[in-house]
Image (cartoon, rainbow, N blue to C red; front, side):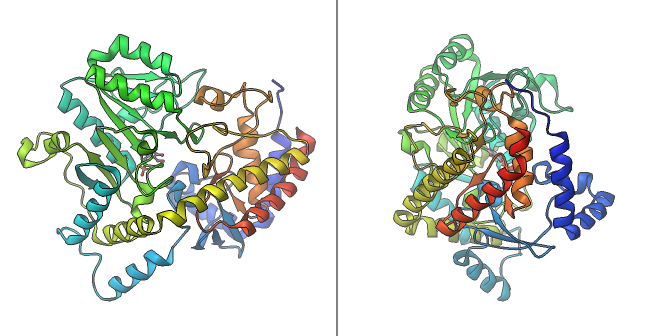
Amino acid sequence: MKKRDYTQLMAELAQAYAKHSPKSAKLHERALKYLVDGGSHSLRLLQPFAPRIVGAQGAWLDDEDGHQILDFWQGHYGNILGHNPKAVTSVLAEVLKNGYGLQTGFTDRLQIEAAQIICEQTGAEHVRFTTSGALATMYAIMLARAFTGRDLVLKVGGGWHGAHPWGLKGVGFHDGFEGVDSAGIPSAITDEIIVTGFNNPDMLCDHFREYGNKLACFILEPVIGAAGLMPATRDYMQTAQELTQKYGVLLILDEVVSAFRYRAGDAGALYGVHPDLLCLGKAIGGGMGVSAVAGRFDILSLVGAGGGNEVKFSGGTHSGHPASMLAAKTCMAHMVKNEAEIYPKLAEIGKKTRRTVTHTFTEEGIFIRFAGDRNEMLPGNSLHMLLFPYEQDRQLITPEEVRNPAVCDITLGEKVMQLALLLENVYTVHGLGCNTTAHTETEIQFLAKACRRAISRIKNYL
Ligand SMILES: Cc1ncc(COP(=O)(O)O)c(C=O)c1O
């Protein structure tokens, strides 16, 4: 592994960027007076400052400095149709104009219609809505612990399920994925979390042999997000299904990213895997803050009167918020209706993105890989983490390989390229991001040109 020093390059890029975006720079100074680090979500606060956005349509953003920026972050991978899709905004604008949408606190028909779509498209028996992916996975874990009467929670190293006590162990890579990722969490909780390996069925079997009878649940992303945007292997998913059934452990699929990304429904179905509980978020909200836990009625009923309201998956002032439910229902219905067109298109543009970026870097003499590019399950993956492995033949199918700075040049992928591409008006996170149906050949060619210019700035430092 070569030790590369990007200090001078980052200073040069930052200087050029300050010139490129003076209004955003000024707003950043003001933001620092009132907001921690200038904002409310750490990933958005890129260094030295983030572009301040004034508008967004489809694949593109407009910023305070008058740039049009090609966006691959796309609502934290939540946008399937791009930003502000007309199919959703036209309906929302109409009802808001007519005095409907912000009267939260009541029941209405929209929740029923949105829940019905989720049940029909995923095979879930029941649904309860909440407002963020973190809340959905937290409630799913509480349900699993209450239903099984067991304490331990098995999760995957590198898996991100949102910021809550059971989600904040085994996320960041520190010579492995064993650490607790936040201060302020009782050790009584973190001691109950067991971390296993993604795409490692042997390790999974070992963990079930050791802890199986004490596990309440195994929570798993079929396409791991923060640690590679790569799909699970078929073998791994089927092993997860078999082991959870054998040991009476609930299988929770966290599909906050993957639901409605590969088909109009859950990605687990593509593996023939049926979770006990399914967590959905991001894409189902059509741009609004909507998430849900869906799944077996006998488990979810613990939330309701029939189950003695045993699990307090309740409250939530903005749960089932009418404008959010309208966006969710409209967007999901659109994706269901146009499934045959949307998903082949996403797969095709996903393939094109990977091919074009790989070609561009290769021509410039820089070796790159996309995590999970050799997976058999989702060949048209539209989620992309661009990686710079030190060895060309290194396989990249586990988070340990993807997030280990001895295997991949993480700083180059995440920080240097991000700023170099932003100077070319391309917004990326974790190496690249995702496609939407608003990304076409034109956008991919724009990205290719931007990559070439970014490479010319960084090449001498590699
Ligand atoms: C797989 C997964 N689960 C849960 C979450 C948490 O969702 P939210 O940010 O809406 O709380 C995320 C967010 O990125 C995620 O990727």
